[in-house]
Image (cartoon, rainbow, N blue to C red; front, side, top):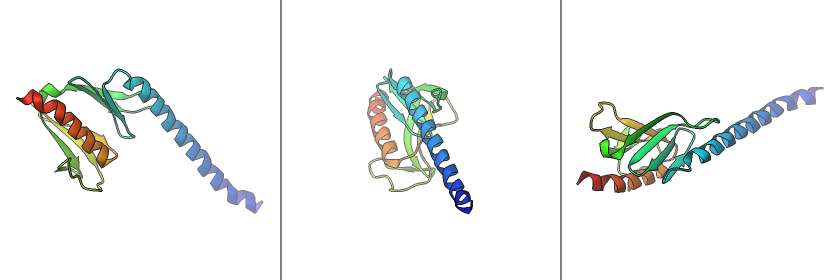
Length: 140
């Protein structure tokens, strides 16, 4: 009987891990359908981001598909910054670690910046570089 009680917590952990994996799989499948019409798209546990032409759409991933979607145009952006731990960093040589990673978009007509969270610094740096290449010709 004691052995059975010792294995019970392990069984609970296994069930929790299986549920967590299934939940994340459902989110990724919903993201794949959502991302089809975009030129570029990214998924991570914090946010989904899609780019079509000069339009960016982002939101939170769920099993039913992304929610709290917001769309804005790169034409309305005044500047783009890569933030690591709420400090602007150079996307060409980002720090190796950080607790929070975001792309920040300062808008021309909007007082509050738009911040899109990322889980990985290299992925955020690649997106920053990619979006700057699209955005910079619009500023001339």
